[in-house]
Image (cartoon, rainbow, N blue to C red; front, side):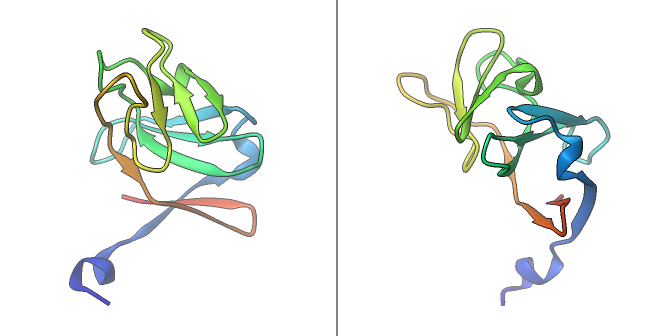
Length: 109
């Protein structure tokens, strides 16, 4: 295990059921700025900085489909796994590690 892995801390966010399916919950106060926690139709949970890389649109207000979200401002699709914009667009927003345990959502910040 590397030194950086040893220092990572998991923070409890909410219950999985507190995030609407195909929706998001926004964490306002984090050291990185607002973070959006998403839940897809398969109950997978993901976290991204709540800013589209294009014009800083609120991804938490976007449309969730599969393993990506569409920004509500200009329809950029952002992948949950790595925060990358999908072609033909180019850009990236920060993504955060998320896990669920016993129905509870934990995020690394």
